[in-house]
Amino acid sequence: MAQEIWWASPSFWRKSAIWVTGFSFVVLIFLTFDTVKQITAGSPRVPAYSVINNRIDYVFDEKRNFQVPVIGPEEPLFGKKLTEEEAKALVSHGKLTTQAKNCMNCHTLLGNGAYYAPDLTKSWLDQSWGSKEVREQSMVEFLMDPSDKLHNGIGRKMPKLGITEEEAKATVAFLKWMASIDTNGFPSNFTPIDQADAPAPATPEPAAEASAAPAQQ
Image (cartoon, rainbow, N blue to C red; front, side):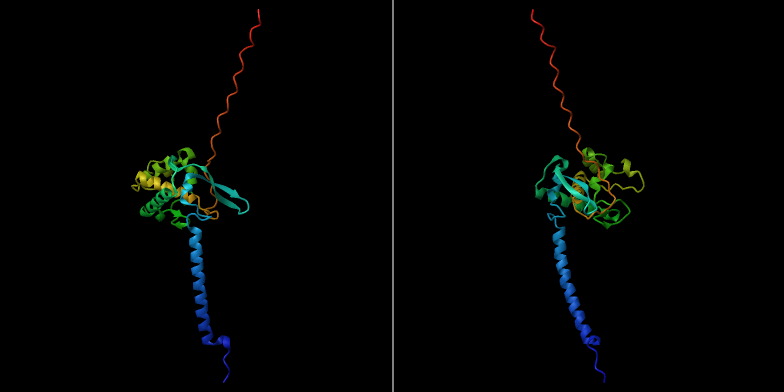
């Protein structure tokens, strides 16, 4: 009777399957904990919720070859600086609002959702809002009633979802926070709104002195 080759033995492959499955399970657990750490607010790629107190912009990074979020000077949302706890509560309310209104049935958030309507990952920086000076109020008004808004009349239209002003402001906070997340350039080919500050008014030149004093008599 020919001797069975060790690598052809059913026992070998059974044990190998057990070891591979066990090793893969350990790796999966490690990657899960590592992923949770990477996507938790306050990590290097996902700023803390209080980032909504600052300007958020996108700048092209030549080394990474795509745009990356840049946290700029203090620029509180709706003109009110929030504590970390207050910012977390507001952003969380906005996130729950997007879930309650089933926004992902049409939109994508961080790559998840549908592709019927625009991706919302960087919508805080969308040029459609006009300028940074009117963006916040424009977003709130659009969320509350998009039916009569100019850029809702082109192509696919967003319906009126019965969003209250409080929910709208919270959603804007969520969108601003989401725009601060480093998504490795996703979505690509995005041109952010111009957030440059208006130039300071020129300092008036000192008034020319009055005509020379009259000559003495």
